Image (cartoon, rainbow, N blue to C red; front, side):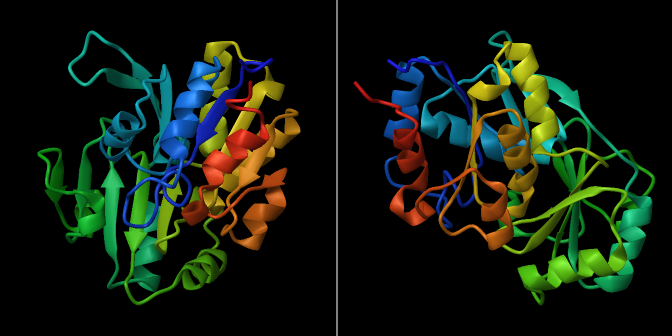
Length: 274
């Protein structure tokens, strides 16, 4: 058993999951060992709830709280509802100004917004967005404006991750929080909201000390939670393939996702040790 109970928050894409959405080597067993040792394992992801729920099932965990949509949504466990979870908190903003800026720079991009109830509106079909369920609807970009949304997602097949980073700087998107995902899309959340702001709420709800926090991730949207964990005396593991600016915000570097980086990180903190 671990000497200290920890709150372990895992990113999904590029951390728990490989690019083909299979699990990183050893991660399922490592998570099971972490829970067996009395630790709390949860998820902190840029994905919406629908795309997160099935990963929880695959990992075999049912934490009390799950952070989705880059911190804009916190789901809480409720065994009385059909899905097993309900929305505990959702942060929103009016995307009109942001969409206007983006449309000028990326007129041919595909756009999606997530509404406060988790339903989504999109301008064109993107397979990675899993848009086949009843809570999605195709609309024009104009119809997205003037609504309160939890996030805006932008995909442009003609641009790289580096292109997105440059565009964000040039457009001055400082009134909102943003992240560029490992598949080169731009994910925009309400101002001041990121994974760390949601995880701090979760930590307080669970009554866990700051120094008990362990976070593991690989992307620019993980920098906030890395800095938050480190500032509180916790541990922040960057995956081996993470960009330099992400690794620099971490307290530790683990292996690449293909080589079982989460399992290695959990082993490093003594999970499963006799």
